[in-house]
Length: 498
Ligand code: RVP
Image 1 (cartoon, rainbow, N blue to C red):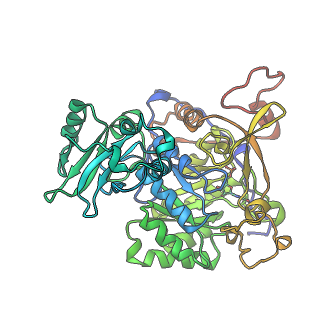
Image 2 (tube, helix red, strand yellow; image 1 turned 180 degrees about the vertical axis):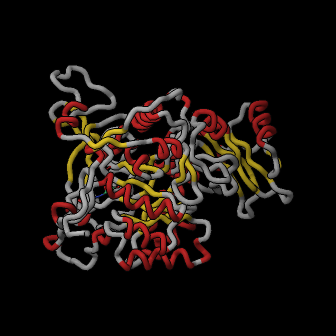
Image 3 (tube, rainbow, N blue to C red; image 1 turned 135 degrees about the horizontal axis):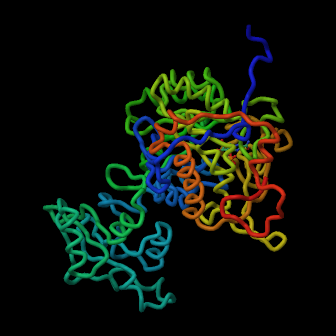
């Protein structure tokens, strides 16, 4: 008979995975998984939609390394849509809608455009979109920056002997042309002489350098973005979609709120959003997951209170220890064939395998990635060590930034509060150690997962989920799991203490 105290909730630290007979080699496992119903990725990790974790740099790095970044929404609609654009333009098989420049633009403006999109040159087109030249680093190399305001693109661009290709060129022919003429960019021209696309050497190199990258059908990196459900949320969702976002995450601390479910239903019912996957969250029970599924989501995000910066469980007394939350919610998702994401509370790489065995298809990381070079914000020096700011989206700093607008405090349903004194935070602000570039950090996190798969005898994620068995442990077991009876004298890249 259920009572109010019937259920015990377990956290990642309460369990371990049992070793198994195995002939799996860690370097040979396949970690491919579903992010949403229609999007797969080779690495089961997402970077959190938080303003100290994911902007375009992080999203690009995540997608290159086989995961996906979720752009935060604590910024204006235009700024967030521009970030989607930056990710989608960062690399591609063939750019069908390349950025271009007119011949009468100044070099100063050209320079700004190139810096914003991290590109080294552009096709030059007239008002009818006919190619009249190309301008790259090479043309700019010997121009003094004092002359940037005075000179125009037409003064320095390359216009003779342009190397161009037809719009239906094959990848191989394009590669051949680029190599033969030792150029870096190949503009593609249609029958009427108009610019129809662009192929760059950088994209060939990137494809070799990042074989696991998460890409769309056109070879562009994939990216997701958070949206709300109040005020101008609909305009935000539309702007993100127009910029080419692959998935929208209706982002709230309580996914069972009717307003959030209504937003999901509305987006799913609108044919304009057909090409975009919709993720709902966060929930922490089977019933919550079912509500998301019934509203039509393409993936469910699980986690109420496990986040390293989260105080919801203390402030509101609400939440479910994350392993149990994932296990319960995943039951509904599995029955419906909908992927689910374990969001928050992943501290060590071993927690990833535990989340997957409990039923998650992927994990979302906040604190584990906030110290990366690609996370927003500068490094700070504290007691001779480098740190980066990390804060909850429900912290005072994120919900009531001094002199700035908070675009995301409706995540905690505090949209109508006008005075900062009347904000009730559900998160804290702090610093995490600086950890260098994302690829090294992710290498350790996912390398740990490879080891889990080796120990449990699983070659794929579905096999891990099928074979994985938990054992519950006690406080003594947890102490025994961590290094003990030693003063650590060297830092390990994947262990930062108990
Ligand atoms: P963690 O990886 O443990 O740092 O947790 C990150 C997650 O915490 C986010 O993806 C989000 O779901 C949640 N979060 C973000 N802000 C807050 C808060 O202020 N309470 N919580």
